[in-house]
Amino acid sequence: MPDFNLGRTQFGDPAHTGNLLNREEANALLEEWVPNERLRLHMKQVAAVMKAWAIDKENADANTAWKWELAGLLHDADWEKHPNDHCRIIIEELERRQVDPEVIRCIASHGPRYFGVEPENSMEKMIYTFDELSGFIHAAALIRPTRYDGMDVKSVLKKLKTPSFAAQVSREDIQDALSRTGHKLEEIIEFILLHQPGVA
Ligand SMILES: [Fe+2]
Image (cartoon, rainbow, N blue to C red; front, side, top):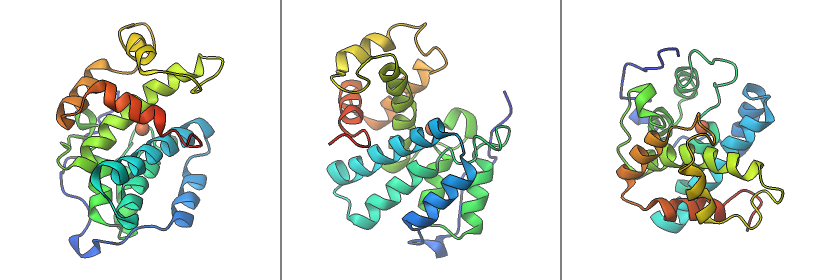
């Protein structure tokens, strides 16, 4: 496994606070950087739950909700083309584009064990948690004939207790992410199931 440690914990320029890519710019970046449809879907799923959480739990206004969504949308943008430099490349690109430092730091904190950036605020803690769990839940949905339809929290919990299922998803990381949020595993799973893109 390559060393992903970013070697720093500060990102972007405070003078660029409030600068966000618009949706067209974000989608264009995604199209160009992430040809793999499955990875793009994963990023859209994380984006959808980030947005929903910001609105439902953080009372976010439209701008703040987009900030959360944007971080989710771009968090793995460099994974496909720069697997050995994951996170560093997208961070540098967003710094070059003078994006709000909160968005950049949020992306940098989506895997503390790898990138060496501890999630501090709720946006950072939630991207870490949603990234781990939504990937796992998606793997569980893919083996069901009806996919997300009718999927419940219990079945996800059962899969989590089956080490051979989606073995590449670290249960330890899920636990670590959760313990930082102060929320219950069941609550987060339910929230993710409720807020799949395309699911009302
Ligand atoms: Fe991810």
